[in-house]
Image (cartoon, rainbow, N blue to C red; front, side, top):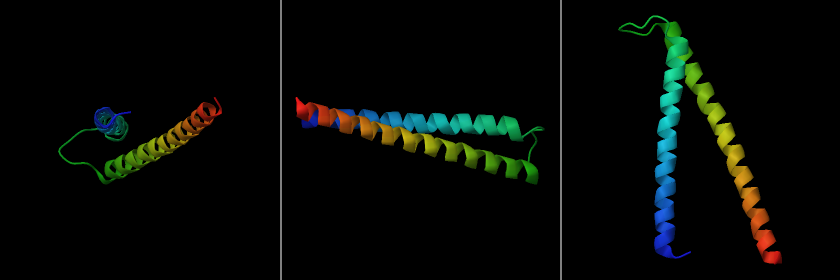
Length: 88
């Protein structure tokens, strides 16, 4: 691949990663808020703060596990493809 094309592809990947991170945070915030804040007001109660913190932590932990597994799978698939191409 030529350098200009690689640069464009890397920029697109970075923009997609940023968009995915923003989407993740928006969804996590919405879901956790709906779950934890039963009576919206001017302040969060201690229980609501704790619930939100734990909910967001679990959401991020699950996302990290899925992402790690996905990237490991991609690496294995790329390895297989390289090996296959070398055999031809």
